[in-house]
Amino acid sequence: MAGASIKKIADNRKARHDYFVEESYEAGIELFGTEVKSLRAGRVNLRDSWCDVVGSELFVKGMHISPYEQGNIFNREPLRPRKLLMHRREINRLMGLVAQQGFTLIPLSIYFKGSRVKVQLGLCRGKKLYDKREDTARRDAKRDMERALKERQ
Image (tube, rainbow, N blue to C red; front, side, top):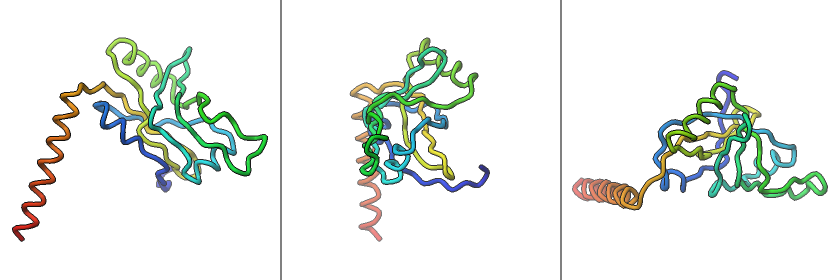
């Protein structure tokens, strides 16, 4: 899949607001045909989704993929847990970090890489309210500086 084109489907912007993203990983996702067709139409919501390790497998929960309109009996439950596809050693490493160091696995984005659907996972640590305020203040200051420079020119 070297040089495969990447087409972004959806971003989880709320994740970057609520969490510090320490590392990111790419994982495949196990989907049915009508779910892929719904993704091609951009009908997915990542807002309240998270990842969980069950046994030795990784699942994404809370991801809402709307039912495909022409799917009739082949449509699946929109909020069903979906299996993520990663190497065993990566899952074991992530499982250890989540269990011991208080990290959370959050889907940051979902995209097509060639014809395959991929999920970008973030190994995240929760932000406190003062961290969110600090980020907002920094963003506003940067915007004000750019505005002032633009007015001077």
